[in-house]
Image (tube, rainbow, N blue to C red):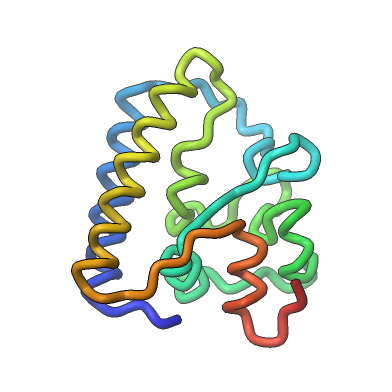
Length: 146
């Protein structure tokens, strides 16, 4: 899947809005990498195909990192406890919080943004696919195994 210039502009604006909404919520982040170690913490990161295509366009997979299929266990952009694709990360990454007091409100921010993204895809006749990140990554990255 390729990202159109219009979708790139849309995602930049959407991500800016989400980041502002999350900053207003003020969730605490210990920068523990919990959001990036999926199997360790028992969660699955979901994303849209256009977000993953956008991420791949801007943030190449790190050399020496696990194969994309291993992203089911952890994100291939996690290095030394830090996200190396932070500026281009997806909605699920932007709205994930370990802060239990703010999790429900963060989920509402996520759902609203996802609705906007889905509406953009429909308005521009883009295929809509929302699935586990590791599956989309394997599908979109040439030569990747699921």
